[in-house]
Image: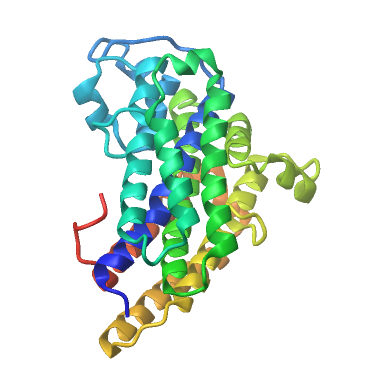
Length: 334
């Protein structure tokens, strides 16, 4: 049986790498989404509501980092927000910090992990560490964040190709798919809340379409969606695809299925751990059953994010269950 510390390190390797990719995708959605072109609005002035609507303020909200951001910055500019999310080492969830945490965890597990995994993670960090704010103007932000996605794809390509299907593999994948579940829900929640803030008095869901189309593009789901839904380009169809699709790898349903599979693949010797392990499996099964009961009408915009909010809360509870079962709290995760 692995030590708790090792299990936690592996789990957070998967979470941090997936989180880094999600940051790139989350910024991408705001480049695609041109619903408003509001400029800088200082904090605390009469236009504070408009600041909330500013696309760069929304991206900070989507990460749940408004309070931490406003301790460091007075305005929501493109330059400040991108720096905060990508290269700010004082931000515990910035791209460079997440990749650094993943790299540190891989280093502690080098005896148990393929050497290629260290090579990729170390190379990713060294490449990102050398980046400066000015690099975003020299090469387009799209290209930069596309390169982030390529690095994370390389990382997961190595894990898929060379890792033995043992506990180490399953813990990394559990972290990956739990993080992905939360990320897809968080991006959807951000799009729904953005629509509500920009059009607070508008009823119906047609105005939500450009927001959800941007979400589709940010998760590389636009083409798969069109193959399955053809010309049915309604907000409800997009929500159904991103939450309930059984075949799209970034849907909530698919991610929970993968999490269930890898959770069941973990082999434990101690009876007490096996009992707690079974309890988490039942928790995942319950969430999957609730998901199976959802219908398209439940995903209508009139819910104003209620469904995604409840699912996000349940995913957070799963993370807490993992920690209480397998980890020594506070030693590796951040």
